[in-house]
Length: 404
Ligand code: ADP
Image (tube, rainbow, N blue to C red; front, side, top):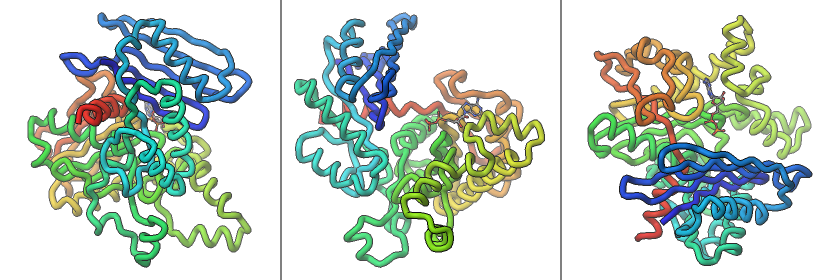
């Protein structure tokens, strides 16, 4: 059987096709349809043969809507002989609210319940729903499964998920912390446990997903017990364009004193803040180059970014009561040795000691099985770099849901 994984955005669909093989899931194709609804589209597919050789196809014909994008994907997979045994589609859905804490086979009732979560994730869930509707309409023969970014954090205890606000705001508006990037945190926590050769049940980990969006999670015995994102992905760490934590009074101040509308404040905090707001760039590679050349704004952006992560590391060590490993993942965590070194510098208080030679130049994608240890032999806490693979995890979860 083959499983198609779809990540539908407002103007794009990213996808991967996995073959369920005796040796585990094999990646057979990956691709992207973007600029949906624009005058020129862009679609590409890379097919991976069993011997590892790849062939690529690129198309720039306009893609009027998501339905056309979905048809492009399925027809290219058919041309490649990869859709004969397609059994299920796994959809990434950003917000599952308190409703969904496990992968869920989609039917009309589930769609209605995902729609109920839209007010909590107006920037993400509508596009995810469009992908689901198109897939169901065009391929009613397939089982569709929703895999939620929030699900892994369904184990947060009330002390971690409650904001200190009146009960009615939770009861009526769903105001609480949910957490995101759960698929990635779950995947790298499991990989880390396997690499350490210990059962996940006995490990206390902090996982750092540092990409364009960024979040930290405290994982105790395989269960998420604390995470840095909250009601929305805005809370927590400094991100490419999101502010992360700030005093909520900043928002009232801007509305009252600067005459900004709530929508403007929302845009500034989501799209013009973070690294971009601090130094004018949001790509970490560019910022590191600027800082290395003596650029003060770039250095300040890195300092704020690193300081925030270290603050969370200390807090999560306290939440967990012991720390067995720190796990770095996603674009920055997997690739930037300098950022990992800055985050782990002088952390003996937590039992963390990096090994400079192991860390220097290390990139997760180049490590065997996408995983490497970069701590010193005498470090009490392991420091691991793990290549995340959210699509593979979605495919695995999809198969689990289909079979249960
Ligand atoms: P997304 O959240 O969009 O999936 P990614 O996980 O791809 O993001 O991470 C994107 C971030 O990773 C960017 O800030 C990029 O600069 C950074 N990154 C990627 N490669 C490197 C590298 N070699 N060194 C430093 N940062 C990197």
